[in-house]
Every structure is written in structure tokens, then in C-alpha cells.
Image 1 (cartoon, rainbow, N blue to C red):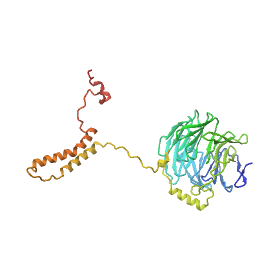
Image 2: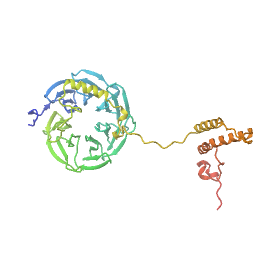
Image 3: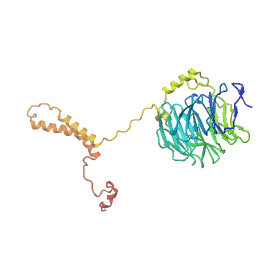
Image 4: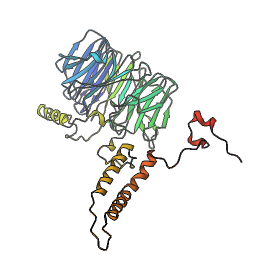
Length: 435
């Protein structure tokens, strides 16, 4: 049996008849929630190995997801997703999401994303309850969904071998990639956001560089679930086998470890625990955890995530997270664009009405100018009127050229022989030039 080095006790192996099981960790790795397909929900404190709450919802459970902390979590049940608190009390029923197959929570934006059986992607703000977006993917039913931790873009894998990337404010996918020759079975994003792993029924695991959208490594293997660790290790499950891949340099991923479950156990989900060298496995009869040396981040910043935070620290972090909540418009492929100064646009042409108004203003200004009195007959009324006319023409001249360009007064009439300037329907009436 495996042992946890920190607590000096066996790694949890929990077995039940309500499987297969899916699981999820909080962002600091302290708490874990498991959900059995037949309705069993359990929540654990992984630091003290205490069971906080378990209950039976008495209907199908497809996915589970923590919200901003362990106080609330979402469960995708038979008809709708439900929100529960840590005591197992039902808080909300999200009927607008429909029959959700997968759930993901965007912690910086407080958005719960779900994909339902009709291929509709929903975004709902968990701090206000407002439905932010409802997008039709148009690519059929899918239960392959993952959020990119770098830019909060949602990645969906489809039956046609495509992977699409979405944001709340766009009704069309930001990126559409043809990744496999058959249905996509799993998608995972690396912590830095520049690498993506995909698996398909064509028995290939591909590593993609999202800066160039090119394949950097291909491994011949099937995978039902994929997950990147904080240190870049890749876990893949196939049947009862779990393989861990490690970057040998230059994105050349090679097998680092293998773990085979008891014969007959079908692995449904693999997930690395943050800030620990542990990989959790949800399978057909429960869940298990294995030690994977070098997979977790050893040094944590308590201002970002604190695996040993107290109740007071948790409340403070919740308040700060709400104050620093990002708007849905900030979800984009390149988040470094936020805070940059937009490049000045080229000067746009003025409209006909604007030029006319400028001409009128210039004429009024020219007419209101005072003409100085001059001697020796140069201040006669006729001379003064001529002088004013010259001032008006001088003021109008630069604006008249703009007015002609827009189409106010063309210099000359259009000739019937100019084929290029005629509409297509009238070009057959143009005169042919004699050679």
C-alpha cells in the first residue's frame, strides 16, 4: 500500500458501489469532493483526512465542481445542476443550464460554465446570479470540457475531432482546431497556458503549442482522461492503466511512471492534487490516490493559495476575491493585452454632413473678420467687399477638396466610356474605345 510522506498515513483508497466516481479539488488542494454516478456525494479534508460530509442525492451525478472555496460546490445531476453548501444543504437549482454534462468554475471571474446535452455552453455569475452567456456550439453533444488556467478560456472537444475555445462575450469560437481523426476523448491545459494535451479515439495523445497552434509531440496511446500537474507532468488513463508522462526536454514527453488498478476497475478521471505529489484516480468502484514524486509545487505563496489557511484567512480571501473579481470581457486568448494602451487608429474620413458644417463655420468666421482701414482709396466699399470674398474663398478652399472626395460636387461628369467606374449591370452599355 502507498503512504503519504507528510501525514505518515496511508493514501486514501475509498470503495463503494455507487461508482464510477469523478472528483475535484479546491484550488489550494486542501479539500476534495467526490461524486458517484449513482448519486453518492462526499467531501473530505485532505489535510486531516476527515470526512466532512457525505450524502445521497438519489439521482444520476455527472460532474462535481467547487466554487470559489469549499463552502459551496456545484453538482451536475440528472436534469439540472444544483448548488450545495459544505453541510449538504441544497442552496440553488440552476434550471437555465439544462441537463449539464460537465462543469467548470472560473475562479477569477466567479463564473460557472457548463455544457449540456444539446451542445449549449452556459456562463453564470455566481456572485450575482446573472446569466452572462448562452452559446450554441453547433457541433453536437460533448462532455469534454476544460478551462485554461492561464486565460480562463474554455476548451471543448467534439465528436468530429475538433477542439474549440470559447469566451463569454463571443458567440463564435475564438479558435477551432482539427486535432484528431475521430472523436476527442480528453483535453487538458498546462498551468502556464501555452501547452494543451488532447486525446482521441484514433489512439493518439497529442501535445500542442498554443502560441503556434502546432503539434510538438505525439504519443501512440488511448486516453479517457488527461491532467497536467503544477510541475508539468501529464497523467493519462486508459481502462485500468494510469500512465504519467514527463518532459525529457524540448516537449519530448516520455513515460515516467505506470500504475495499474485491480483488473476490472475502469478509470474515469485522473487529477493531480495541488501543492502535493499526489495523483487521485476516480474509477468504477471508488477513488484511489498514488504518489507521483515531483508533480506538485513545493513552495506555495500564502497570498495566492494557502493549503493550511484558517477560517479567518478564508473569509479575508473571499472578500479580496470579490473585490478583485474580473469582468467577463477580460477573458481573452492573450490576457497580456489588458492594461496596454491601444494603438492610435488612422484618421477616418469625415462624413458629408460634417464637412458641410465645417464649411459653414469657416465662412462665418471669415465674414466676421474685420478689415483694417487703409489710405489712398484702398478702403472703398467695393474693395472691402472684394477683400471679404477672398477671405471666404481662402477659408473654404481646403474643405472643398474634402467635400469633392466624399461626393458632394465631383469635378466632372462620369463618362459612359469609363467601364471601371460604372456599376456591373451598366457596363455592357459603355462605349468601347477605338484603337
